[in-house]
Length: 466
Picture: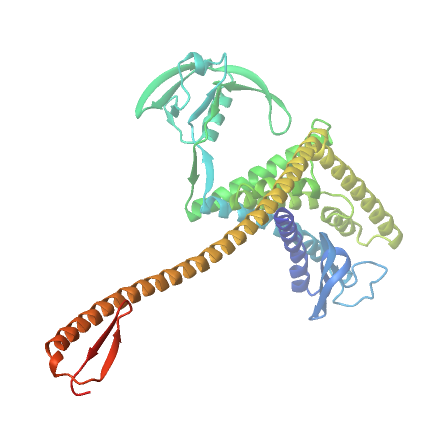
């Protein structure tokens, strides 16, 4: 779900920036913008402001700006209409859509260089059998710090230098191992590899693979500006070279183009790598979209600019019939290309291998779902056991209280018995004293008497005066 939201966000940026380029220049030139739409199909919501309807439609894979009088059938000759402007002004409106995408791509590259981006160091992660590095004694964990006297820090720089040595047979490397530097002479092996454009070319190889050591590289504000320009120019040159090789049949179209489905797949991979990877993807997509839209094909911006150039040369616009035929042809070409690209994306990213992987992932999800269900059941049973244990603890507490009450009663009874025994002793003592006094005064007592009972015996005494 998160990948889908990121994909829609990136796609939305591409569309909004592109259409805003048309929109803002049309406004500046004095052309009325009737509609600014993000997406196609039924509208989700819309708002009218300053004679322009802003809307979001249900299919987010595109967008458009509707200008007043932008076709011969609806043109009424008003000064605020698109066709009332000169070919140069109309070409500027069309051109500024791709231009804004191109500028955004450059800005993203600028931000990447300034904010910092990850780079592999020259630490050796592996050795290939039969190559010069292994024979020269280079070990996994070594860091290559210089090549033929030139200091290097990053794997990309090392790769460029070694690949360029197509005529050399050896190279002197300075290797850092356990904080000590060693100079090693390594034989270079030549091998034919495919480059980014599918061309076979001979490159030099040491026979090493990179380690997993990554550092963050940042540049100053102005330095990042010029690095951003250089990166944008390099990508532009590479894209046009690829287009030329596709046109001339030297590069397979299947391996070189992608559509929304492919972009979604790439987005899912970039999203897992972090914000810098996403920024790089946005930059590449914006530059690529700008270049693609400027191709001289009907329906594309480049096609409109081409026909405006023809109009400028001829001194008049195309007829309604010619415009309709060209538009239909261009639309047909775009639809066929879109279908081909979508099919290609399905095969390339979701082919048999990918479907197998998808099935594996589905099985994993199924297993995880079953495990979660079992965990939920065990959790429920555990909760029930906890409740039973709590109830038993409560009953045990009540029993303890009853026990304490009984012990208190028992202790109270024992104390009562003890007190009673003490009382009997005192009573017996008193009786003895009374008996002694009675015996002493026996001869002087009257005839009245009383009984004293101590619980065991009955004593009779006659006390004088009663």
